[in-house]
Length: 471
Image (cartoon, rainbow, N blue to C red; front, side):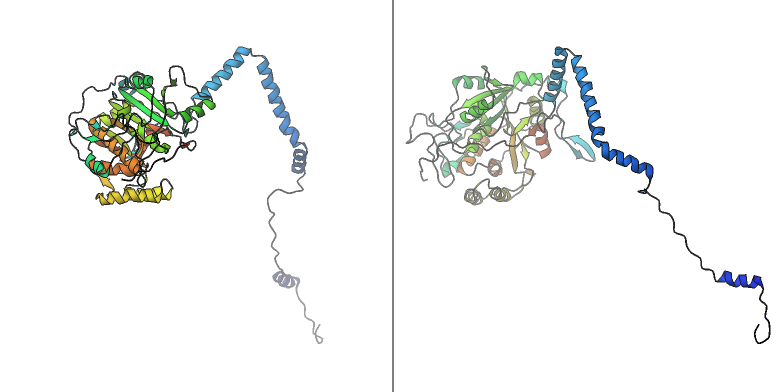
C-alpha cells in the first residue's frame, strides 16, 4: 500500500524478475589422472617398494639353480666340446677392424658399386703370373752404383750429412750433380739404389736370401723398432698361397719384443702365413727411413720377383694378391698402382701439413721444397689428369726397369730430404714422366686392407751421427 492505494503484484511476474537476476555458476571439470588416495594402486606401490629386492634376486637364484642342474647332467666331453665351439666362433669373429672381409662400396652414377672389383673365386684359382716381360719401357736395364770393399772411417752408422741428408755406406754418397743426372732417362741409367757397400748394413742371412730368390711374386711388410704387431693376411685363394710369398722383415728389437709377448718363430721361419726375415745392422737411426728399404727397394731384395705388393705394418692385407694384381695392373695395363691422397693434392700443401702435425721439422721441409722450387717443380695438383699426391701405405707394382728406376730415385729423395715419402712422390713422378700408373681412389685402398693403426712408437736405434761430412 502506498499513500492509501494498494498495488498488487502477481507471483508470475515476481518469478520472472527473480529469474532474470539469477547468476549462473560454471562447474569445474574433474581432472583425470592418478590420485594418491586410490587405494588399490597405493597398496601395490607400497608392496613393490617393500619387497623389490626379493623380486629381483629370487628369479636370478632360480636361473642359477636351473643352469647348474643342466651342467650336472652333461658329461665332461660335452662341456669341453661346447666351450671349444664357442672359442672357435669367437676366434673367427672380427674384432674391430681385424679380420673383416666385407667389401667397401661407393655410389657411382646413382648405384652402389664395389670399390675393388675382383674376379669370381673360381677365376682367381686359375690366375697365373705372366711370363712375358714388358718390352715397351724406355729403360732396358738399371745399373746400381756400388763400391764394394772400400772402407770408411767409423762404422755403418756414420752418416754423410748436409742439413737433412743421411747418406752413408748403405746409400752411397750421391752429389747434387749425380741427383740431377739420375732423372735423365736412358736405356741403361746408372744410379744409387742402396746396398752400396758390403759394410753398409741391412744384413740378411744367406738362408733367407736363398728363399727370397725363389719368389716370383711377393707380399711384404716390415716392423722395425717394435712399433707394430704382425697381422695375418686373409682372403687369399689356394692358388695365391702356392704362388705368392708372404715376407715380413723384423729387426732384433721387434724380435725380442714379440718373443716377450709370447710370439715365437717356427723352425721353418714362419709365423702363420708370413716368412719372418730378421734384419741385422740397420743403416739408419731413423726407423722410418729403415722401413723405406723393404718398401721401395723390393727389386733389390727379391731379384727374381716379377711383381710385388707392399703393405704397411699398421694394416692387415685382406684380398687375394693375384686378384689384386689382375684388377689394378693387368686389367688396366699399368706397371704401378698406388692410392690417391685422401686429403690433399699439392706437395706444397702437404709440406705445411707435415710441419703442422710435427711429422718433420720446418727446416727439413723448407730445404726440400726450396730445392723443388729451384728445380722448377710447379704447384700443380694434378699430373696427366690424375691426382699427383699419393698415400703410399700400399704399393702394387711390376718389378721392371722403369719402375725399378722410379723406386731407386724415390728412395734417394727420402734419404736426401725428409722420410715423409708422399712429399717426394709427385716430384719423381713428374721428373721421370712415368706413364701407365694407376692412381686408385681412397675407397679401393680401404678395401685392400683393414687399417689397425700403429700400436706403439718405434724405438730408434741407439747410435746417432758419428761423422759429419760437408758437400
